[in-house]
Length: 331
Image (cartoon, rainbow, N blue to C red; front, side):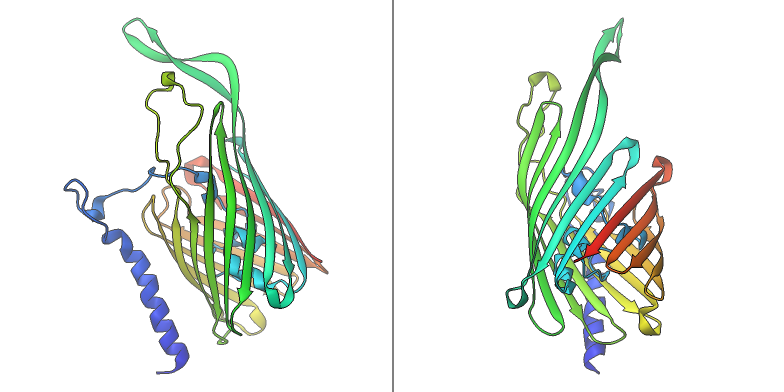
């Protein structure tokens, strides 16, 4: 068996293992593991929103989609080793319920030392009408008080990646994160780890990421009138393995496939493809499995000189469509 065949065999085994993780959980309170729905057991949900239109259009393939630009800090930090000098990235997401999410990152190649990056991402929920439960006769109904409050999230991070061999690169993120709604807030430190391996066969790349690692935290500013206080808010940890391969010469047609194992939901599969016209126009599409809302995504990319722009639309089922845009500059 050739080296590539052995490598692919091991990677496929890891891929299957991720998908089977959901069926190997411990039995809780007599409920079979296969029936356990882990949804809603973690906080910091904004960290799960993709801010990169390219990978979002390609089925949310984060671990294996080759970028080599500053957007990689939000997906697989190991991929920033593809930046030859400096790269700047800015992205915006028009999310459901009039939520806006914006991100900015900068990456610099320091030669033999490695590649470093800085990033910031901010989510704004806008004005939210306050409602309270009010007794009306023998029942309780919600009443709009006329007061508005706001909510938002912030993530600011540092990234480091290094090429440890001619084929393997590793990287990590360290981020300060903050979540606020009205007078309540919580802060934490989170970490991402990623690897990227180029096999040399048809530009086949294997990627693996551990994202959103961190300790449990509690809210500050809690009021007894707000019912039971949530404690030990967990991070939305996500483990992914994926592969990306060029099916046509000159990287004209790329296909990416990933499996993910989150700690707060069932296992998921992501599939994406990209067609390249003369390295100037890129047509992308993707499909996701294992999500309650939304499965299809599609988008376009444009390269002109040192500037790259991307646009994507992600279907969210009954919640509508998420629109994303980004601009990158290779300095």
